[in-house]
Image (spheres, helix red, strand yellow):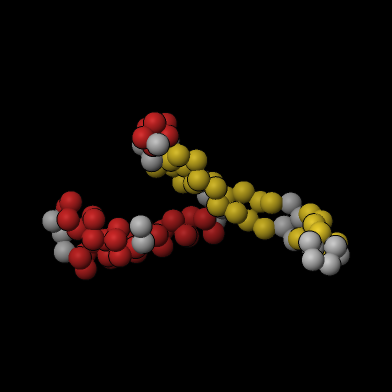
Length: 89
């Protein structure tokens, strides 16, 4: 599902206009992005938890040249689904 399909599904279930639903979804994504920038944990009860974790720098090997390369540290967003979501799967 992409954003347009999400907007369409929410619009059908709520009866709101497509423009209003799009504005709300865009705002929610923006707020989540700001929280991730601040390295905050976002918990949505009944849905799951988003956490920002830091990968340590590491060494890896280029499979084509067998050359060793350094991979820098980086921040990654992890999602852990709630129990109810896991049961639905």
